[in-house]
Image (cartoon, rainbow, N blue to C red; front, side):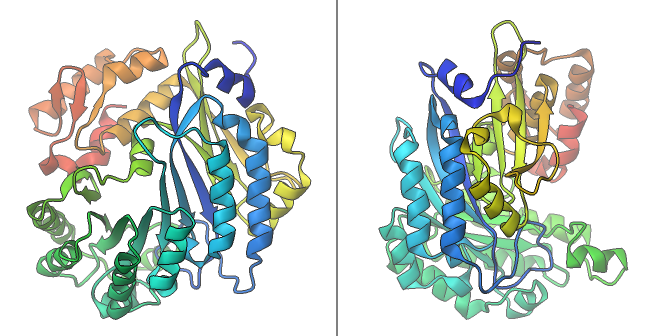
Length: 423
């Protein structure tokens, strides 16, 4: 195999045929750690926002070569709780990315900020809109005070509704809200009514996630000890179906397993992940991914991750030479006191195809298996995969339309198992 090119040479190769990519910026701090959350987040009330912003800008400077030959479709500020980030500091990052980014041909770049109701009111929403944010995603999670307390949330139902109202009054171009269902004690009727309550506010995007218990979280430890009340699988499945019927009845299409949107209001950033697009991760704990395609070879990719402790990330970003950031081949494979990245993963073409299957099948539209395989330079329909597809098709768990595979809505409950059978 030829030696791996650095990001700059890779980008230059694509200058005449730009690919779509997204930018993810991680803000690592929260007011409290939710017991179900396994994202990188820290509770540090005295966090230095300006120093962190400086570090992100330093990383961006070093990673800038990734923008060459890429159309940036979306910028997503996630966390943590990005609505805690001072708007002026967030603006510094946003403007720096915009200066380097080539926007998509179909319009402006989607800019999303994740928000918690405890740190979002009309004034904060307006400040974010004023600096260029055009999409707010609000972590409502529940419209029951009892379940909000169980989930460790700091807001109540009134606070959630006030945050949404403030975002709408601030004329945020797009407002989305998240719900968690499948919580012990929640009835199917309650899950349905909460989804409807959000849709009836005029929201054009709603995300509904099943509560999952992750290792390394407080809920994970309680579950391991048998001390966490869990919802019955049958009730969770019924809630999933009821939520779908409720939201589609309000005109929100069920376009992805956990997401509903009015026409044209889909979360472009997340759709990029599901389509297998490249992404540049900036900030503490952020992941980045780039494909490498050389003539005569199967495509492969590299995924790397930044340091997960804020102080290590800031130190690495400030002290490391920026020339190292843009060279994928130099990303370290172990934690380094002065290193920005803590891991690097090689992804061969077969691994990339398995990821395309796993992510593409989450979309209602499915994905083109033959097209994805051809783009990666590998065989899509192996005998084993063909037999698995026939087995799934016979049981109504997939639909084949030419080379496009998709999962019918009624079979989305088995999405992960379906994808694994096609690996």
